[in-house]
Amino acid sequence: MADDSVPVVAVDGPAASGKGTIARRVAQALGYHYLDSGALYRLVALKALRDGVDPDAPDGVAALARALDVAFDGDAVRLDGADATDAVRAEDVSAAASRVAVHAPVRAALLARQRAFRRPPGLVADGRDMGTVVFPDAAAKVFVTASAQERAARRQRQLRENGIDVNIQSLLRDIQQRDARDAGRAAAPLRPAEGALLLDTTNMTIDAAVAAVLAAVRAAGAGAGGRSIRG
Ligand code: DC
Image (tube, protein in one colour):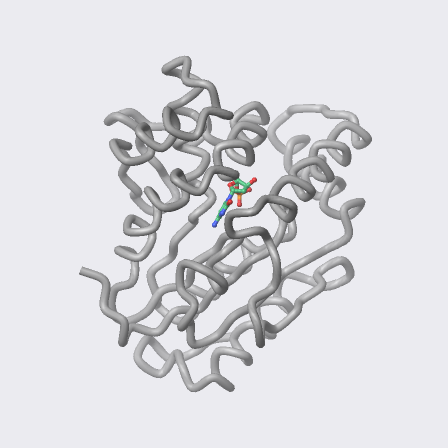
């Protein structure tokens, strides 16, 4: 059962902004739990692709989301009992995740699963609507951005490290398409929560971004329930 007195740090932002890395590091420094909410949308998308369900069909996808058999184990995710950590990161799954995330019934189906991650001593939640919809009472809210060009370059570097060479223009186009869909949808569109700390990481190191988030958490008076803050 989620406990509303448990502090939440909400880290939202567009694809490849660095929010995942920042949120994980902040969770580690605070000794908090970590929720990668994007992984849930990716798992729904993967399940839809595998089962031949149209990602653009709200009712079919919502039914999958409600019945989703998933497990999180550190950075690993399992779908229907089998490891899906790499599968959910594939480009076709990324694109389908952004499409299934448009549907309000799909988002509603995932709400309770996300809130269940709120456990002592605290939670760092990473996504698009953590501060606006899922945890509107979060103790600290951060909105991480970076220019689309920089995000495409980061994605390209990441793929190269895995031996995959992808044209930067096509990555840029994908990122811009996902941004438009995530920000333009009617249900929980991507936007900074009221009072969120805006963090543009285009010219910022991860260390500096993590330090800025930890300072915001401290200023909000959260973080004391976990381990001592290392920044
Ligand atoms: O953060 P990510 O790239 O893993 O997210 C994948 C997709 O899921 C993204 O295109 C939008 C969607 N998403 C969402 O709508 N709400 C969230 N809280 C997290 C992700």
